[in-house]
Amino acid sequence: MEGEIGLQVAGIAINADAVGLDGNLDVLREELDHHAGIGFAYVEIAPHGAGVIHGGGLHREQMKKLLKVLSAYPFRYVTHGPNPLNLMDREHLELEKRLFMSSLQFAGETGSGVMVYHAGRWLPEEQFQLPDIGMPEPDQQKVMWELERTLLQEMGVLAEQYGVTIAVENARPYLDASPYCYGEFLQSLAEMIVQVNHPRVGITLDLGHAFLASRHHGYNLLEGVDAVRPYIRHIHLHDNYGRCCASYEKKQGELLATGRGDLHLPIGWGEVPAREVFARLQDYRGVVTLEIRPRYRAFYEEALTNARVLFAAKGLAEDPGAAKQKKV
Image (cartoon, rainbow, N blue to C red):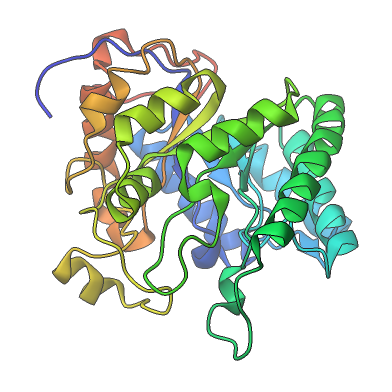
């Protein structure tokens, strides 16, 4: 990753892995101490990881404890909504709406400027392997698309009240179900945001997911980035080798050995063409989250260094009120 492209961003975040936290605030303290020591300015945190959403609603006592923990650190935060959240789920729609509203409230109370939401799924991942479950027909997909569009408009109004921007994330593909989500295609995600047409609803460009999807579906990654560029409000940066896996393949050691799947490696380890992508995003001024699996925790500092080199560290415009930055 030699050379400089002159990009400035508002700050670099690291994800507080939801599975690793598992609702344990003592673990969160350890993670925040670790991240502060490395020099991250922002942390991306999920309400389900912090254990503050129960049955779709915020658990006030747990939320109070969480806010006390967060107040002890100089970080700013990004919120990642619960992964299963799906505004296309007609069967459990009231629960999904409540969960979305609780996530927005969480974002507001933690001072997050952005709430990441995974694009709605025609077929959710938890149903891929169920018997007698198939992909909805095209006419039903149109109904589900319209439902998501309408609800994103409604949630945009609520997001404005909390001072939060909803950033819809593009989806990773799978061998056993794709396309299960319109968000596998960057052009389709851009179309959804155009139709929603709300200033508080934009896009999270997940570069690792986009690379996998472009390889799997055979579309041009850079053209896809051009399509979503005007609507990008957040970025997830991580690496992989562009080779898809099935949804049930979970052993990361085996996947890394074969270079398959959504590996969430430190940038610079795989084949994601990050320089080419960011060369097209010179006007981006938001936060970039290094969304890396905790199995690579020992390499977070390397990941931060790689990102700073990519963004031309001498021009990096991080907020002076955020966490103290190490020199690289």
